[in-house]
Length: 585
Image (cartoon, rainbow, N blue to C red; front, side, top):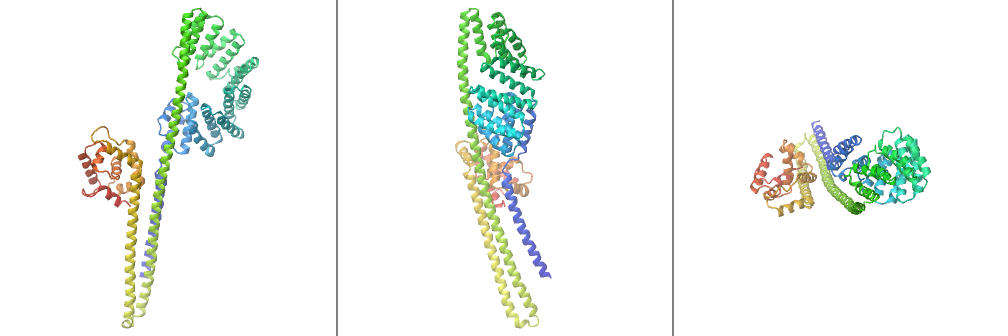
């Protein structure tokens, strides 16, 4: 009975070892696959904050996005939300849209995971970005796909906006009839959705297109409907844009007295300068030069967007007054401003191209870093699996060997019970079996020692591979370069906070159990800054090289290392790096 209990205890012990080995393997794999990526909670909190601010303070939301972490490093989901928020901010403050290569990534994510409304919305932003870059064919293709989704799910508002942007593409190409069709389709969509403001704006665009195809009567008819639709709108900018359009229609018809009230009413809108310009031009056309001059002098003169228009109107006023000297002066200033504006536009386009190139280059670098990190993770997984496989094989071998021993032990015990009455006769046979048993035990001990030696050897190889990964890394090479070119005690510390975080991340990737080992077995109250210094020590730099990197003198670096070893209860004459590598399991 006692022997059976011992056997049962041994089997239970073996099972415990097996479970422990499997648990360690799964935990290590889980840590490698998930521990190296940043928690998405920070990005989620930031994006939630931005989305909440878009309606009440779009400028603040824009600043938060600009100051946020590099978006290319976000997950696909967070990056898609970042792009969507940026597009919504653009709709509010009229800044530049993101480049198309960024929106393409968001577009792919939303069309795999987003709602139909989100798919159409991101398509609109991507199409507009293509249009801004001059790629009208791609923009048209994206808009067409968006219309298919919108039509399928009856998203009339979004379909209306899409038709408007398609109309804009046709208008740029001077395809007036096609543009007119799209604006009409947009108006129908907005009307179905009872979106009064957008419906009025679509009618305004239809009226403008009628003017370009010399259908003034139809333009006036459509704009009159738009005027009646926008009577009760709370959006003064919509009302002002329609008043401006009606004023221009009456100017085209030569009905200057009817045009004037519309221009005056349009001044209530947010963008007043176009209406000032139109009203002054109207005064000049009706020979009301004094009124034109007075209004122009009271118009804000510091608006750089309309500076050349102001100069041109002064030129026309002075010309009408036959003051040709001042007229020529303002005409020259007008042409100079036009030339400078053209040059500034060209420079802006060049800078925009450079910015897009730099963003694309940065994204490629991020992708390269991700690939390198994945290779490190893959190598670590292979090493852990190999070590785990060896451990399992060793435990299986031990189980088999124990079973053999138990088998022979059973035979010996049986023979002993049979030979109690005749011990002298069977003593030699018992001793023989006992000798065989001792031999097998000796062999088991020898084999166990060999396997333990192999495990140690493989552990050494793994440590060697880990050090090779560290020495091959771009971070280690950069640290080595800094050590070799800078003298300690001069300038600022060479290791920035960002580099400290990268060092910690790289070391804990190579030695995933370092943090737990130090905090659980050596120093539970170790500070984060001390752990970062520990990570730096694992690169194997001498205390003189550490002095260069930390911008302290050599004696201070030596003292710092001695104090740190004392903090970890490591003897002063024990090499810190070798001690940690040898004891991390």
